[in-house]
Image (cartoon, rainbow, N blue to C red; front, side, top):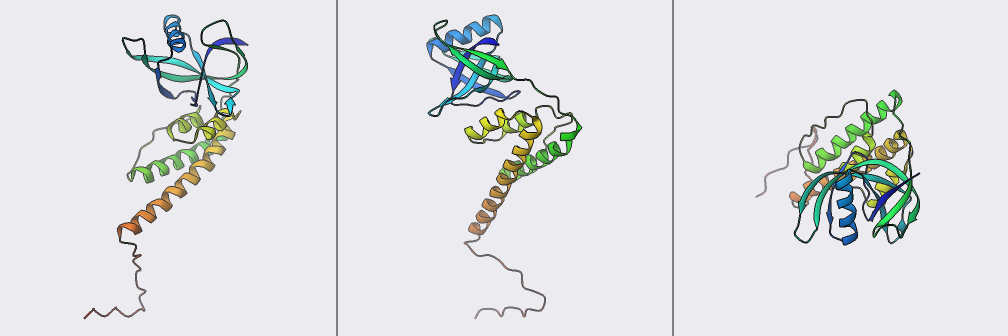
Length: 219
């Protein structure tokens, strides 16, 4: 067990992924200043109208981007370690303190290589359709935390991102992402086809068969 500063927010931070934050509340300004002074991390955990979730991720401050005269800060953090929140401690600091248990992270082996490559191909397909251009996503084995890297890049709904964060193994996370990316690619492909039809005023051009006589010119 460990006690760490806690920052509940309606955001899901993934290990290894960056996230910009605007710090403006007095208690969190103090928290960030203390972390900057000591080089320590703070915990981020999803908190919304449904409550505070148990699984979160620690944030390492990568850069103090800007400090304003009133003490507000723009910082860039990167996700570090997943944890399970066991208890929220109050009264020790102006901000929340969480009693957490860090989750063990496996080192994926060759058994996930095929699944990882499928997810990379699907990601390339999604980005290509969305941007209407070729993409070059450079990812090489070993695919450590590939699932978090992909989930951090695609704008999934918050609850979906939380589900991915909570899955215990890389295989389970990649299987979930394969399903999500396949569905996203299919939706984008349908949207693109609808847009192409709309751009031709709703007319679908049909190529005549070889045996079909030519259409006579209009008089």
